[in-house]
Length: 385
Image 1: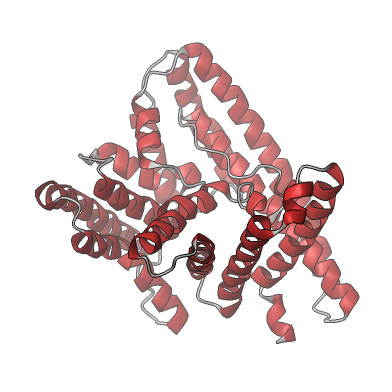
Image 2: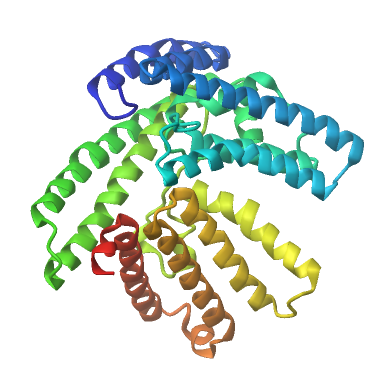
Protein backbone atom coordinates (compact mmCIF):
# COMPACT_ATOMS: atom_id res chain seq x y z
CA UNK A 1 0.00 0.00 0.00
CA UNK A 2 1.15 3.55 -0.76
CA UNK A 3 -0.02 6.66 1.05
CA UNK A 4 -2.36 8.90 -0.98
CA UNK A 5 -2.00 6.75 -4.08
CA UNK A 6 -4.05 3.56 -4.09
CA UNK A 7 -7.67 2.74 -3.34
CA UNK A 8 -6.83 0.74 -0.21
CA UNK A 9 -5.32 3.80 1.44
CA UNK A 10 -8.29 6.05 0.68
CA UNK A 11 -10.77 3.46 1.97
CA UNK A 12 -8.76 3.06 5.18
CA UNK A 13 -8.42 6.83 5.53
CA UNK A 14 -12.19 7.23 5.28
CA UNK A 15 -12.85 4.47 7.82
CA UNK A 16 -10.15 5.49 10.31
CA UNK A 17 -11.14 9.15 10.11
CA UNK A 18 -14.61 8.43 11.52
CA UNK A 19 -13.45 7.92 15.16
CA UNK A 20 -11.28 11.05 14.82
CA UNK A 21 -14.34 12.98 13.66
CA UNK A 22 -16.38 11.69 16.58
CA UNK A 23 -13.64 12.65 19.05
CA UNK A 24 -13.39 16.10 17.48
CA UNK A 25 -17.16 16.55 17.56
CA UNK A 26 -17.22 15.60 21.26
CA UNK A 27 -14.32 18.04 21.88
CA UNK A 28 -12.09 15.20 23.06
CA UNK A 29 -8.32 14.93 22.42
CA UNK A 30 -7.43 13.18 19.15
CA UNK A 31 -3.68 12.85 19.66
CA UNK A 32 -3.55 9.30 21.07
CA UNK A 33 -5.93 7.98 18.42
CA UNK A 34 -4.01 9.85 15.69
CA UNK A 35 -0.77 8.39 17.01
CA UNK A 36 -2.25 4.87 16.85
CA UNK A 37 -3.54 5.44 13.30
CA UNK A 38 -0.08 6.65 12.24
CA UNK A 39 1.43 3.43 13.61
CA UNK A 40 -1.16 1.40 11.67
CA UNK A 41 -0.31 3.15 8.40
CA UNK A 42 3.41 2.80 9.07
CA UNK A 43 2.96 -0.94 9.52
CA UNK A 44 0.82 -1.27 6.39
CA UNK A 45 3.33 0.65 4.29
CA UNK A 46 6.57 -0.72 5.74
CA UNK A 47 5.57 -4.02 7.38
CA UNK A 48 6.76 -5.98 4.37
CA UNK A 49 10.31 -4.61 4.74
CA UNK A 50 11.53 -5.49 8.26
CA UNK A 51 14.95 -3.93 7.62
CA UNK A 52 13.32 -0.58 6.87
CA UNK A 53 11.29 -0.80 10.07
CA UNK A 54 14.45 -1.63 11.99
CA UNK A 55 16.25 1.37 10.52
CA UNK A 56 13.27 3.57 11.40
CA UNK A 57 13.34 2.35 14.98
CA UNK A 58 17.08 2.97 15.27
CA UNK A 59 16.67 6.42 13.72
CA UNK A 60 13.91 7.46 16.12
CA UNK A 61 15.80 6.16 19.14
CA UNK A 62 18.96 7.93 17.97
CA UNK A 63 17.20 11.28 17.47
CA UNK A 64 15.25 11.09 20.74
CA UNK A 65 18.31 10.25 22.84
CA UNK A 66 20.34 12.92 21.08
CA UNK A 67 17.70 15.61 21.67
CA UNK A 68 17.29 14.60 25.32
CA UNK A 69 21.05 14.66 25.84
CA UNK A 70 21.47 18.01 24.12
CA UNK A 71 18.82 19.60 26.35
CA UNK A 72 20.94 18.66 29.36
CA UNK A 73 24.21 19.69 27.73
CA UNK A 74 22.69 23.01 26.62
CA UNK A 75 21.46 23.65 30.15
CA UNK A 76 24.95 23.03 31.54
CA UNK A 77 27.17 24.68 28.90
CA UNK A 78 24.84 27.25 27.38
CA UNK A 79 25.12 28.37 23.75
CA UNK A 80 28.41 26.64 23.05
CA UNK A 81 28.64 26.60 19.26
CA UNK A 82 31.16 23.77 18.99
CA UNK A 83 28.92 21.47 21.03
CA UNK A 84 25.89 22.65 19.07
CA UNK A 85 27.51 21.84 15.72
CA UNK A 86 28.44 18.35 16.95
CA UNK A 87 24.83 17.61 17.89
CA UNK A 88 23.51 19.15 14.68
CA UNK A 89 25.85 16.97 12.58
CA UNK A 90 24.81 13.92 14.57
CA UNK A 91 21.13 14.70 13.92
CA UNK A 92 21.66 14.68 10.14
CA UNK A 93 24.17 11.81 10.14
CA UNK A 94 21.58 9.07 9.33
CA UNK A 95 20.38 11.03 6.29
CA UNK A 96 23.98 11.64 5.20
CA UNK A 97 24.70 7.91 5.46
CA UNK A 98 21.57 7.20 3.45
CA UNK A 99 22.55 9.68 0.72
CA UNK A 100 26.09 8.27 0.62
CA UNK A 101 24.79 4.70 0.31
CA UNK A 102 22.48 5.77 -2.51
CA UNK A 103 25.19 7.70 -4.35
CA UNK A 104 27.73 4.85 -4.14
CA UNK A 105 25.22 2.11 -4.90
CA UNK A 106 25.98 0.36 -1.64
CA UNK A 107 24.24 -2.99 -1.18
CA UNK A 108 23.58 -2.04 2.43
CA UNK A 109 21.16 0.84 1.93
CA UNK A 110 21.70 2.50 5.30
CA UNK A 111 18.62 4.11 6.83
CA UNK A 112 16.61 3.37 3.72
CA UNK A 113 13.12 3.90 5.06
CA UNK A 114 10.09 5.94 4.14
CA UNK A 115 10.25 9.62 5.10
CA UNK A 116 13.83 9.88 6.39
CA UNK A 117 14.44 13.19 4.58
CA UNK A 118 11.45 14.96 6.08
CA UNK A 119 12.03 13.42 9.51
CA UNK A 120 15.58 14.74 9.45
CA UNK A 121 14.31 18.28 8.86
CA UNK A 122 12.26 17.96 12.02
CA UNK A 123 14.98 16.40 14.16
CA UNK A 124 17.57 18.99 13.06
CA UNK A 125 15.05 21.75 13.69
CA UNK A 126 14.59 20.55 17.28
CA UNK A 127 18.38 20.66 17.86
CA UNK A 128 18.50 24.20 16.45
CA UNK A 129 15.60 25.33 18.65
CA UNK A 130 17.23 23.78 21.74
CA UNK A 131 20.36 25.80 20.93
CA UNK A 132 18.25 28.95 20.55
CA UNK A 133 16.60 28.29 23.91
CA UNK A 134 13.13 27.86 22.39
CA UNK A 135 12.90 24.26 23.62
CA UNK A 136 13.89 23.40 27.20
CA UNK A 137 12.23 20.00 27.37
CA UNK A 138 11.55 17.32 24.79
CA UNK A 139 7.98 15.97 25.00
CA UNK A 140 8.34 12.32 23.98
CA UNK A 141 4.80 11.83 22.68
CA UNK A 142 4.69 14.97 20.56
CA UNK A 143 8.23 14.35 19.24
CA UNK A 144 7.57 10.80 18.04
CA UNK A 145 4.07 11.67 16.84
CA UNK A 146 5.45 14.59 14.83
CA UNK A 147 7.99 12.26 13.25
CA UNK A 148 5.56 9.52 12.21
CA UNK A 149 2.39 11.60 11.62
CA UNK A 150 1.09 9.67 8.62
CA UNK A 151 -0.29 12.44 6.36
CA UNK A 152 3.08 14.17 6.01
CA UNK A 153 5.60 11.38 6.52
CA UNK A 154 6.56 10.83 2.87
CA UNK A 155 6.80 14.29 1.31
CA UNK A 156 5.76 16.87 3.89
CA UNK A 157 4.59 19.56 4.32
CA UNK A 158 7.23 20.20 7.01
CA UNK A 159 5.61 21.28 10.26
CA UNK A 160 7.36 23.11 13.08
CA UNK A 161 7.76 21.16 16.33
CA UNK A 162 6.26 23.75 18.67
CA UNK A 163 3.32 24.48 16.38
CA UNK A 164 2.58 20.75 16.06
CA UNK A 165 2.82 20.23 19.83
CA UNK A 166 0.46 23.15 20.48
CA UNK A 167 -2.07 21.66 18.05
CA UNK A 168 -2.17 18.17 19.50
CA UNK A 169 -2.49 19.35 23.09
CA UNK A 170 -5.02 22.12 22.71
CA UNK A 171 -8.77 21.55 23.12
CA UNK A 172 -10.53 22.30 19.83
CA UNK A 173 -14.04 23.78 20.18
CA UNK A 174 -16.69 21.81 18.30
CA UNK A 175 -17.51 24.53 15.77
CA UNK A 176 -13.84 25.06 14.98
CA UNK A 177 -13.23 21.34 14.50
CA UNK A 178 -16.28 20.96 12.25
CA UNK A 179 -14.99 23.84 10.15
CA UNK A 180 -11.53 22.20 10.04
CA UNK A 181 -13.04 18.87 9.02
CA UNK A 182 -15.05 20.52 6.23
CA UNK A 183 -11.98 22.31 4.89
CA UNK A 184 -9.97 19.09 5.26
CA UNK A 185 -12.43 17.06 3.18
CA UNK A 186 -12.49 19.78 0.52
CA UNK A 187 -8.66 19.79 0.36
CA UNK A 188 -8.58 16.00 0.04
CA UNK A 189 -11.09 16.03 -2.83
CA UNK A 190 -9.31 18.90 -4.60
CA UNK A 191 -5.98 17.14 -4.10
CA UNK A 192 -7.38 13.97 -5.66
CA UNK A 193 -8.49 15.98 -8.70
CA UNK A 194 -5.04 17.57 -8.97
CA UNK A 195 -3.07 14.35 -8.59
CA UNK A 196 -5.29 11.57 -9.92
CA UNK A 197 -6.99 13.45 -12.76
CA UNK A 198 -4.93 16.44 -13.94
CA UNK A 199 -1.40 15.22 -13.13
CA UNK A 200 -2.15 11.75 -14.49
CA UNK A 201 -3.47 13.25 -17.73
CA UNK A 202 -0.40 15.46 -18.17
CA UNK A 203 1.82 12.46 -17.43
CA UNK A 204 0.24 10.53 -20.31
CA UNK A 205 0.98 13.47 -22.58
CA UNK A 206 4.61 13.44 -21.41
CA UNK A 207 4.89 9.76 -22.31
CA UNK A 208 3.56 10.41 -25.80
CA UNK A 209 6.21 13.07 -26.36
CA UNK A 210 8.87 10.36 -26.18
CA UNK A 211 12.58 11.00 -25.66
CA UNK A 212 13.22 13.22 -28.65
CA UNK A 213 15.83 15.98 -28.38
CA UNK A 214 14.53 18.30 -31.10
CA UNK A 215 13.61 21.84 -30.03
CA UNK A 216 9.83 21.38 -30.27
CA UNK A 217 9.77 18.17 -28.21
CA UNK A 218 12.16 19.67 -25.67
CA UNK A 219 9.99 22.73 -25.09
CA UNK A 220 6.80 20.68 -24.89
CA UNK A 221 8.42 18.33 -22.40
CA UNK A 222 9.73 21.22 -20.30
CA UNK A 223 6.28 22.78 -19.89
CA UNK A 224 4.36 19.54 -19.47
CA UNK A 225 6.84 18.29 -16.87
CA UNK A 226 6.56 21.58 -14.97
CA UNK A 227 2.77 21.39 -14.84
CA UNK A 228 2.87 17.67 -14.03
CA UNK A 229 5.25 18.28 -11.13
CA UNK A 230 3.02 21.03 -9.75
CA UNK A 231 -0.30 19.19 -9.95
CA UNK A 232 1.20 15.93 -8.68
CA UNK A 233 3.01 17.47 -5.70
CA UNK A 234 0.41 20.14 -4.93
CA UNK A 235 -2.28 17.45 -5.13
CA UNK A 236 -0.43 15.27 -2.65
CA UNK A 237 0.17 18.26 -0.36
CA UNK A 238 -3.50 19.23 -0.41
CA UNK A 239 -4.52 15.71 0.57
CA UNK A 240 -1.87 15.59 3.31
CA UNK A 241 -3.02 18.90 4.78
CA UNK A 242 -6.67 17.85 4.49
CA UNK A 243 -6.05 14.55 6.30
CA UNK A 244 -4.12 16.44 8.99
CA UNK A 245 -7.13 18.68 9.59
CA UNK A 246 -9.34 15.63 10.18
CA UNK A 247 -6.97 14.58 12.95
CA UNK A 248 -6.95 18.01 14.56
CA UNK A 249 -3.61 19.24 13.21
CA UNK A 250 -3.44 22.39 11.09
CA UNK A 251 -0.48 21.41 8.95
CA UNK A 252 0.59 24.50 6.97
CA UNK A 253 -0.21 24.73 3.26
CA UNK A 254 2.62 24.03 0.83
CA UNK A 255 1.61 25.92 -2.33
CA UNK A 256 0.09 29.31 -3.10
CA UNK A 257 -0.41 29.84 -6.85
CA UNK A 258 3.33 29.61 -7.64
CA UNK A 259 2.92 30.22 -11.37
CA UNK A 260 1.60 33.72 -10.62
CA UNK A 261 4.91 34.73 -9.03
CA UNK A 262 6.26 38.12 -10.12
CA UNK A 263 9.90 37.23 -9.45
CA UNK A 264 11.98 34.27 -8.31
CA UNK A 265 11.92 35.34 -4.64
CA UNK A 266 8.14 35.50 -4.84
CA UNK A 267 8.18 32.03 -6.39
CA UNK A 268 10.02 30.54 -3.40
CA UNK A 269 7.43 32.12 -1.12
CA UNK A 270 4.76 30.21 -3.05
CA UNK A 271 6.39 26.90 -4.06
CA UNK A 272 6.96 24.10 -1.52
CA UNK A 273 6.51 26.82 1.08
CA UNK A 274 7.34 24.76 4.16
CA UNK A 275 10.62 23.54 2.62
CA UNK A 276 11.73 26.93 1.29
CA UNK A 277 10.81 28.66 4.55
CA UNK A 278 12.65 25.98 6.54
CA UNK A 279 15.81 26.64 4.53
CA UNK A 280 15.24 30.40 4.80
CA UNK A 281 14.89 30.31 8.59
CA UNK A 282 17.45 27.64 9.48
CA UNK A 283 20.08 27.99 6.73
CA UNK A 284 19.94 31.28 4.81
CA UNK A 285 19.28 33.55 7.81
CA UNK A 286 21.93 31.85 9.94
CA UNK A 287 24.56 31.86 7.20
CA UNK A 288 23.84 35.56 6.67
CA UNK A 289 24.15 36.36 10.39
CA UNK A 290 27.37 34.35 10.77
CA UNK A 291 28.96 36.02 7.73
CA UNK A 292 28.02 39.46 9.06
CA UNK A 293 29.51 38.64 12.46
CA UNK A 294 32.72 37.34 10.88
CA UNK A 295 33.21 40.69 9.12
CA UNK A 296 34.93 38.91 6.25
CA UNK A 297 32.64 40.69 3.80
CA UNK A 298 31.67 44.34 4.14
CA UNK A 299 28.91 44.32 1.56
CA UNK A 300 25.55 42.93 2.69
CA UNK A 301 24.78 42.24 -0.96
CA UNK A 302 27.85 40.01 -1.24
CA UNK A 303 26.81 38.20 1.93
CA UNK A 304 23.29 37.67 0.54
CA UNK A 305 24.69 36.22 -2.71
CA UNK A 306 26.94 33.79 -0.83
CA UNK A 307 24.05 32.79 1.45
CA UNK A 308 21.74 32.19 -1.55
CA UNK A 309 24.25 29.86 -3.21
CA UNK A 310 24.88 27.92 0.02
CA UNK A 311 21.16 27.74 0.80
CA UNK A 312 20.03 26.56 -2.62
CA UNK A 313 23.08 24.35 -3.12
CA UNK A 314 22.20 22.47 0.06
CA UNK A 315 18.59 22.24 -1.10
CA UNK A 316 19.76 20.68 -4.35
CA UNK A 317 21.94 18.13 -2.54
CA UNK A 318 19.05 17.34 -0.19
CA UNK A 319 16.94 16.31 -3.20
CA UNK A 320 19.71 13.95 -4.29
CA UNK A 321 23.37 13.65 -5.17
CA UNK A 322 22.72 13.30 -8.90
CA UNK A 323 24.34 16.12 -10.95
CA UNK A 324 21.03 17.53 -12.15
CA UNK A 325 19.76 18.05 -8.58
CA UNK A 326 22.93 19.93 -7.70
CA UNK A 327 22.59 21.94 -10.92
CA UNK A 328 18.98 22.73 -10.01
CA UNK A 329 19.99 24.08 -6.61
CA UNK A 330 22.85 26.19 -7.98
CA UNK A 331 20.64 27.44 -10.83
CA UNK A 332 18.13 28.82 -8.32
CA UNK A 333 20.98 30.16 -6.20
CA UNK A 334 22.10 32.11 -9.27
CA UNK A 335 18.58 33.33 -10.05
CA UNK A 336 18.02 34.51 -6.47
CA UNK A 337 21.42 36.22 -6.40
CA UNK A 338 20.85 38.05 -9.69
CA UNK A 339 17.36 39.07 -8.54
CA UNK A 340 18.74 40.39 -5.24
CA UNK A 341 21.45 42.46 -6.96
CA UNK A 342 19.02 43.75 -9.58
CA UNK A 343 16.38 44.79 -7.05
CA UNK A 344 18.93 46.50 -4.80
CA UNK A 345 20.87 48.29 -7.55
CA UNK A 346 18.40 48.98 -10.37
CA UNK A 347 16.69 52.37 -10.45
CA UNK A 348 14.46 51.06 -13.22
CA UNK A 349 13.16 48.33 -10.91
CA UNK A 350 12.56 50.76 -8.07
CA UNK A 351 10.69 53.12 -10.38
CA UNK A 352 8.44 50.52 -12.05
CA UNK A 353 8.14 47.55 -9.65
CA UNK A 354 4.53 48.45 -8.76
CA UNK A 355 3.41 49.11 -12.35
CA UNK A 356 0.97 46.54 -13.71
CA UNK A 357 2.80 46.20 -17.02
CA UNK A 358 6.11 45.61 -15.23
CA UNK A 359 4.63 42.98 -12.90
CA UNK A 360 3.09 41.22 -15.92
CA UNK A 361 6.35 41.15 -17.89
CA UNK A 362 8.33 40.13 -14.80
CA UNK A 363 5.83 37.36 -14.10
CA UNK A 364 6.11 35.99 -17.66
CA UNK A 365 9.93 35.97 -17.47
CA UNK A 366 9.82 34.32 -14.04
CA UNK A 367 7.51 31.60 -15.36
CA UNK A 368 9.97 30.73 -18.14
CA UNK A 369 12.90 30.63 -15.71
CA UNK A 370 10.95 28.39 -13.33
CA UNK A 371 9.99 26.00 -16.12
CA UNK A 372 13.60 25.73 -17.25
CA UNK A 373 14.52 24.96 -13.64
CA UNK A 374 12.01 22.11 -13.62
CA UNK A 375 13.56 20.86 -16.86
CA UNK A 376 16.92 20.68 -15.05
CA UNK A 377 15.24 18.99 -12.08
CA UNK A 378 13.69 16.33 -14.33
CA UNK A 379 17.16 15.06 -15.27
CA UNK A 380 16.39 15.20 -18.96
CA UNK A 381 18.87 18.02 -19.38
CA UNK A 382 21.64 15.43 -19.07
CA UNK A 383 20.78 14.29 -22.60
CA UNK A 384 22.07 17.63 -23.89
CA UNK A 385 25.32 17.74 -21.93
